Length: 244
Image (tube, rainbow, N blue to C red):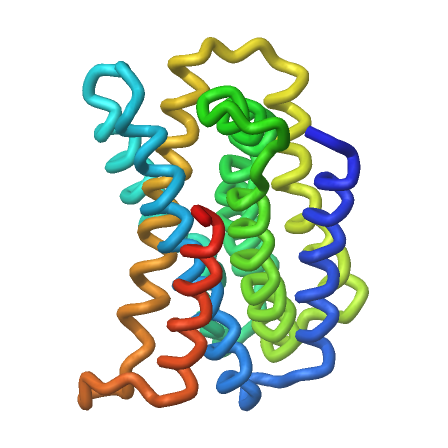
């Protein structure tokens, strides 16, 4: 995995989080538009690229890894209060335990997502006979982490967390996926386990993308606002362009 990918992965989270210092909880309309685009893009690359590779492997019961990732994400979101898909549920009273819980859920999620980054591009290139790697998984994670970082900063800010602590938490979150990729790069992981980890990440991404998109309609009306529908269409459109 080239060094520039580690850098952009880290800086993209800092960028998303820095926007959170400019916005407040009432700025959720912008956050929802970003989430609509990223959720649609993630769903697109997952279905068009990641799932065919996972289910095209000869690993028995590979679907169990996907299911495991899906339900593991449900558990992690009990810790992170849904920051991964833009939820901002500030507690009535700020506690250190709340911050630790949010950061634990986010960090584990981001670390696991980063693991396949160290080998996915190379495997994709070999399997498809391309002379260059494809970075749709990297871009999907970046597009997912930017709004998550924005939501994290707003959540901590409205919870009364000091700015320097907020920056510390943001930096920890930013480091998790690069650390996951680095750990994978420095470890000899059997090919079948690599595919299993990717399948686990696929389950996690599927959960996040579907939650984002299912929450796009107006409450009780089952109707998606026009701006969000445009964002979703653009996200799916860009994901389709990756197969051209």
